[in-house]
Length: 255
Image (cartoon, rainbow, N blue to C red; front, side, top):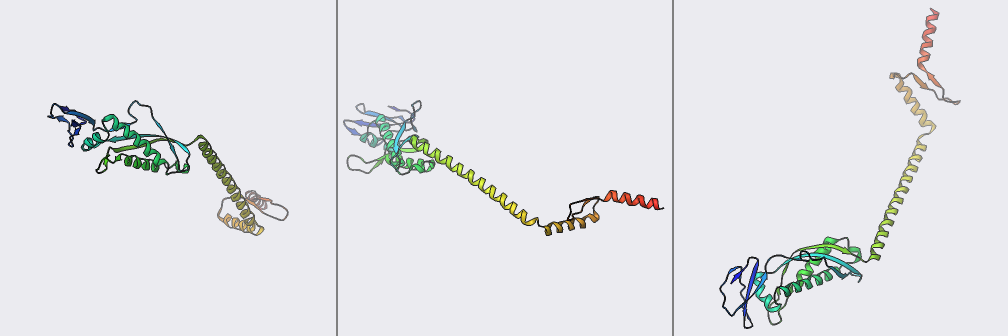
């Protein structure tokens, strides 16, 4: 008898199951024995080519959710005899694993509210834990609980709340953006008013005179030839360059 690679065999005859699994390779078995084969490779839900299954689940508020997950799982070859004795063949295992995935997803989702759906990684981790726990079963007779399979990878691909909740969330986001925009506009107006108030307090007659005197002081070493002279009657412009030319011409005439 040959057990192919990626498989494990379980020998049974006359209602008795050999408690020792047969690993891959050539195995000698009695002619009256039957061999049940199980895949020891990593399996996937949904299987390749199958359409994604949307699992109906309830949130903590008992609101309906549609969940799409992908799960990779694998059996322990040493547990194959127990699995065969308690559950059956490969098809029965896949059916049990599928039910465990559905129950684990529902048990994980019901622990979170609608407001928690943004925490996808947290929810996915809880669902994975629940699925993995659901893959542990107790034998019908006396005996210790044993693991049917182990979750090797879990992916939360989609999590859809009810349409009315999606609409409410979008409206809330739009309102928050509008409020933030209005707050920004009010803050800009307040800062502009504050700047104008400070400017009005700064531009007093005394401050302007002080600044004017500072400019006059700096003009001693400056090449600027135009000077604004403030008076009570206005702000005449004094062209120092023209004044210098007039004074120079007067001196030449007097000579």
